[in-house]
Image (cartoon, rainbow over all chains, first blue to last red; front, side):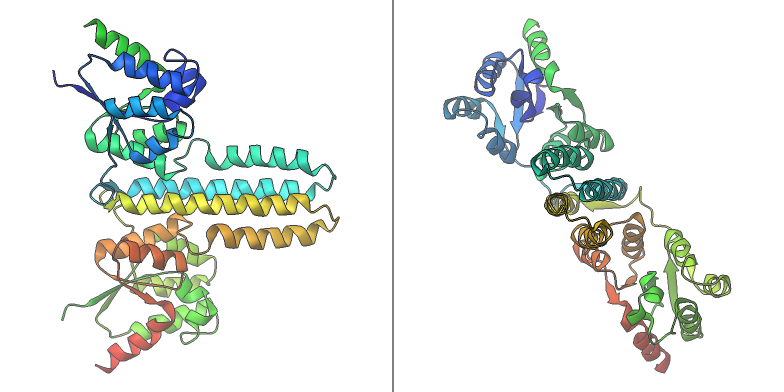
Length: 189
Length: 189
């Protein structure tokens, strides 16, 4: 059998639930993952933008170790074509969210209680939730899914928006918390 | 020479500056356009979604006349492929706008003056401007550009977001206010 290919996301090491079995914090989870990959016939890819994002969460030593076992590359954004329907759905989703965002902003504008700190905290939480949950909301997430698609690799992520987009374009994916048990199983073979 | 193909947008009849030479209101502009097209070897297309949108602005009589001279059809959204870079740019644009929208919402949430009506009016104006100007913000606009691209037709619109998207995918376009002089010129031939 050909070696299996994976594209990994920041969430694998940053999301506490996803990294649990690899390590208790991002740096130790990276080390745990590097160790789990030892001797396995798998190719692990990471887009440079995601690699750089990860640097904000892990120490330099862990990142160096990771760099030696993963393959860093970006998707060929100019060479890959997507069905127009994907953008069509995205535009409609964004339109609905923008309307939701306005309703939220209106509610908070009407609330003239003087507790501004509390208000802003709530506004940010609700706005973030309405605008960004369950949608591809960054170039980094987009690159992630596109790279997995291009390489016909399995996307390893716990990001809801990334998973949804992966489903739209027929890209295989694995919930990040299942990566550890999968590597263990592959080792057993 | 083959007959020229155009895809027309609501803005051709709804935008006062664009329709000026065709008529003083949407219904008379539609009649003016139908008249200007008489005897010309041109094909004018309109997506059904845009045709329906136009019904909200013009009387039934004008719409009937229009329906006899235009060709109604939607783009083949599932058959057309776009470079992934287009979606990539769109995601980044939306992300920046979402952040802008939050800054706006915060400003209005902090403002505890009791003049809520005035505040909401200003909020809606600014929010709309920040979120929707210069971006494809509806399925209707998307269909418009996509249809022009599919038919290799000239998009006739004064919508900034539609023009920008047309440029991204290499679609010919003409500012809506230039449609009248162009038809006049074609008639002269």
